Amino acid sequence: MPPSRWRDREPRLTRGTSPIFRYARNKTPASRKFVICIDNSGNEASLIVGKVYETAEDSAAAKHSMLRVLDEDTSEPEGYLYSAGMFAELDLPEAVKLQLQHYRQAEVT
Image (cartoon, rainbow, N blue to C red; front, side, top):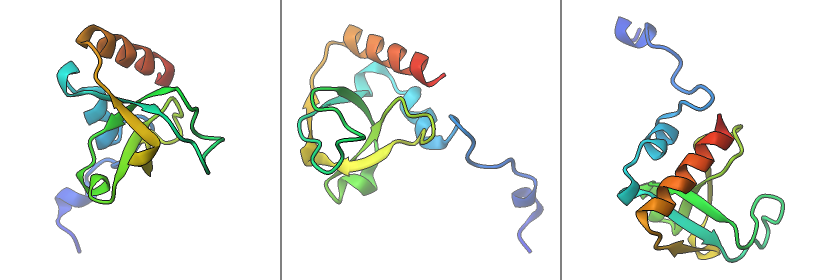
């Protein structure tokens, strides 16, 4: 039987509060990364070419040339994994990063 501290814990994943989502939402502006979709082949219903997406840091996904992409879809607050080749990283001014993050949070809540 696991120690009592494990039995007394709250459920780990609840809508909008997963550890990855919280981390991505609370990152400093300088560490936020945004990408633009340049290829949605095979994912036409999920990705829009030319749309800007925020990414969450995921070192395990990066080892497999994948990106964890955050979207306004609240059913999956941790984001989705896509091939990194489907996106181009954007170098945005800090003010723009803050505005995009604010806009994304408003859509999720």
